[in-house]
Length: 378
Ligand SMILES: Cc1cc2nc3c(=O)[nH]c(=O)nc-3n(C[C@H](O)[C@H](O)[C@H](O)COP(=O)(O)OP(=O)(O)OC[C@H]3O[C@@H](n4cnc5c(N)ncnc54)[C@H](O)[C@@H]3O)c2cc1C
Image (tube, rainbow, N blue to C red; front, side, top):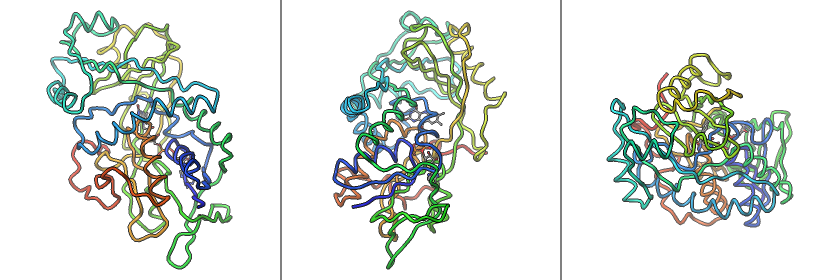
């Protein structure tokens, strides 16, 4: 079975690998360079932001995905010969008296219900554990088992795996439309006019999936949500845990670099970093982790999260279009959800129904009553 995958981000690349493991012949079509959009730009935190706000089906998907990471990491690192720098350094949420939303009780309830180990720290314990924190906190919650990875390394490792597994990858290959025969999708036409024959097509084009779906004649409400990031350079140990607050998060890498992110902007595909957002991130650092203020600013960048109206991904067959599948709209959680997405989608396309209930992620679900988890208004 030949499968054409549109999009060479973490979702497309990992699905290609798993399809190959199941005996299919995937081809990855990437408009630019493999792994250079959202999957490259993200923070790599392997835990959703405020997971207690989501429906239970989402937590089940996250749990299943995170359980796959240790073995996936081992295989990726074995084949690629490089480290993806997955680090289990825990997630700390500082609590302030003037927090706009009090997450404490909901977070504790959710953790207990789903078996996520959590500790409540008073101000003395929290600032002893994380000396860079503001003295104005009232306490903190710490999830010690939360891990993170370094996105560019994950994508480099995936590229090497695809090479090692002889999976065909076409870069600078922009998918323009679908080819059909007898009512069934049988390939992709590229912008240069060439045809790629396939038994099935997977749309995994991240933030561009909504536009492409329009061109292909169906509706998929995925749109870009821009996130800006600032990278600091410091000594290892200045920040010990991932520190996350509603205004910003701070992610310490093994070599002492600290990533500060990320804005949530509904500005279409407008690229570049802005003074306003960089200022907001710096102000958040000043208020939350002032101990980082002497660190050097090394770099800044941005990426487009594939946003969905309810914060949940779209996964499954396109209703009424035989041979066409979607795995997109992973929004803020695409790296955390990539293993389970790739596993479910590759099984499903090969004819094996998912073991999990996928109704919350269907393409034709009702997204009209979406609440706070979806993309921000302008
Ligand atoms: C600032 C930021 C922070 C984030 N932090 C986290 C985090 O901490 N944890 C987490 O789990 N997630 C995080 N995310 C989200 C995560 O990065 C995304 O959900 C995930 O990378 C989406 O992967 P993807 O493969 O769907 O999209 P992408 O990586 O964007 O890949 C889609 C690919 O499709 C290609 N494409 C588009 N159109 C076409 C076409 N016509 N033909 C061929 N190819 C095409 C694009 O060039 C692109 O390479 C973050 C994202 C951002 C931007």
